[in-house]
Amino acid sequence: RKEVEQDPGPFNVPEGATVAFNCTYSNSASQSFFWYRQDCRKEPKLLMSVYSSGNEDGRFTAQLNRASQYISLLIRDSKLSDSATYLCVVTQFNYGQNFVFGPGTRLSVLP
Amino acid sequence: GAGVSQSPRYKVAKRGQDVALRCDPISGHVSLFWYQQALGQGPEFLTYFQNEAQLDKSGLPSDRFFAERPEGSVSTLKIQRTQQEDSAVYLCASSPGGPGIPGELFFGEGSRLTVL
Image (cartoon, rainbow over the protein chains, first blue to last red):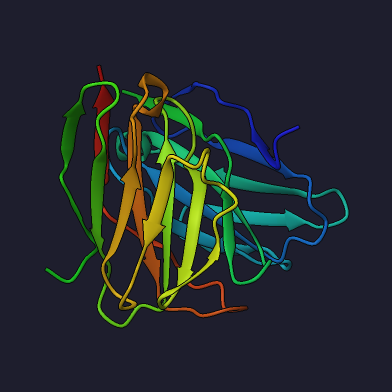
């Protein structure tokens, strides 16, 4: 079983739709959580951190459920420019840091 | 520029050749990571440096892969006797955080390796 799992999609949604992605992780000792965005043939970039209390950044809302070991990302009023792959990232501290990436969920927002 | 710089951007190698990929992290960043990303997959962890110390190399797929960061800044990932399954994008990322500080990862644009 992969340490971080995501539905690969693709999710094809119309502009203005609300879409939600989930991610599950297997290591209960995981300490920090993030969503990264990766455009086609580009490098990943941080979208937002995920906090236990949940957090919002404009149209994006992230939630963490430690008991069930899953993380969610909600995108409201989706835009064409939101089309990308969304990577769930979990950190584990061994000797230093280890950021573990999920396989990513591909989103296409259609006009 | 101020970002993470990787070279070469594209590399085509014949099977059996050795390759070296360079990463120039953001100045002052303590942590440096190498990832391998196959087409349609998420980045897979290869190795992690804190300054010049290689603290985790558990992700290196075989002893053909070697990474170093001798002066705590520029890092090189070397792949010996390349195989076709080594074809991937190799991403370097740096972070200002040290141990226990999960700072943001800043990625370079990657080095795309194709082994024929």
